[in-house]
Length: 352
Image 1 (cartoon, rainbow, N blue to C red):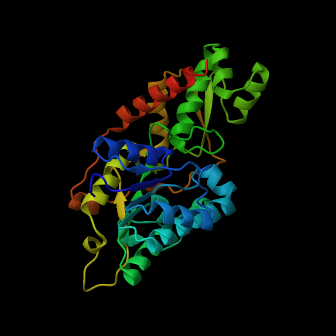
Image 2: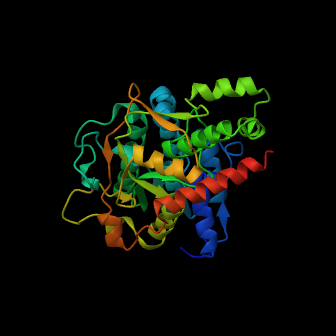
Image 3: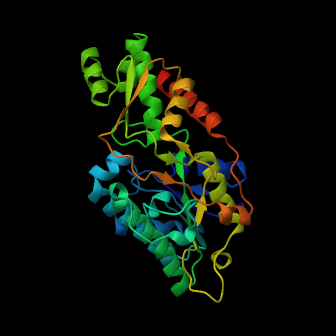
């Protein structure tokens, strides 16, 4: 990419999008476009195409998506498949129509089968049944990566898909209703710690609730008490985590150095051209929870609710492809969580 190239980051306010913008700026890119949801609703086909026709971005990072944890995925199944399909269809097709030089589509490790050989290689896609709780979201993302492949094959575009492991970092979604496991655990234990230490003003500021009894009732809804925190599942499920700053660095690396033609062999069917992005190591939810507990300084106990689902028991991606292309992660898990918690506390302190 040229340093003065016009770059559109769809979802620039989100976890990965904001990290990509920061990474691009650090590397000298200045002509970066970002539109909030209020400014541009990517679910609206007409509005999306009009934006592309006006701005004609040369490069596109497609990070915009409806995302959430296991509870949100399973509860809002229609929203997850509809909204994600609409967003990616509109952006990818508009990028094609308006001559975008290169597009990077951000997917998810949830695209792979529930029962899958480990570590999960890109070619394991669509070899067996998906995990039920996130099936709509996974199907939407599979459609996105296949759409990129199909447009490349038929129209000669240069659209690349990357599939990250579970992401975390600053600007994450800490909403207890919809958050992924990492921010949910951090916020739960932080609030339980405040409750245990009778720091009620900070709890009210965090929750944006004025009445203490109402706040305590709300916390109990999510299993947050002064001496315990409830966690869904057995705690035995294993997850691979990657800091959003590492993910952003990988995305910019791919955009700068990798083309679609580099991702398939000329004498074979063109499929599974997507790239896994991860750390190459995993951790149990139980060990993760205890690590977060130590970082936050919560002194209570962790209660695992085995009536709630674990999701896929093991989901470790193979990083062989991205390693062969020349990229590796840098941020270790404990350091990344500590940094994320400090950011969260600072963000909460501004409300007091």
